[in-house]
Image (tube, rainbow, N blue to C red):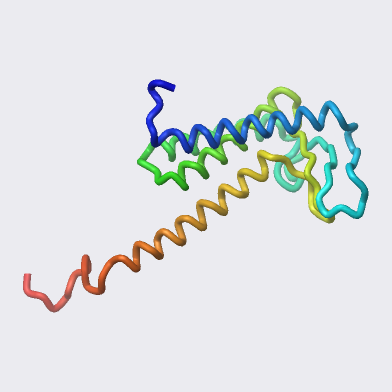
Length: 170
């Protein structure tokens, strides 16, 4: 990691961690469970439920693999472009890395398998995976950070500073 800059670390570490965990958990589930199998019993609020998904979130766009591959590549390019376009604070870089790792994990499944492996299941909710979870958590981090950060920055600016006074002579 000689050429790695300190500002790149949160982004790249988050992307690599999410991608690695996503692919590892999917491999374990695929090797130890049968498609459609649940574990453990029905009375658990979170269970493993091995399913394959040829669509997108919530099962939309079923069997649109080529379209979903193209849109994933566009999404990954947009994430990388946004990250490279300006210096990002570490929470933003971390969240963008989580999104990149999640998008790459599901893209890898689509290219290799023709479907995405999902296995986390709450009652009355579609199954999902580590990649999906990381993308959702990343959005929450981005929204929360920017809402809190913007509010904090507004509170720092004293009244009248940086604002034009319409009655002042110029």
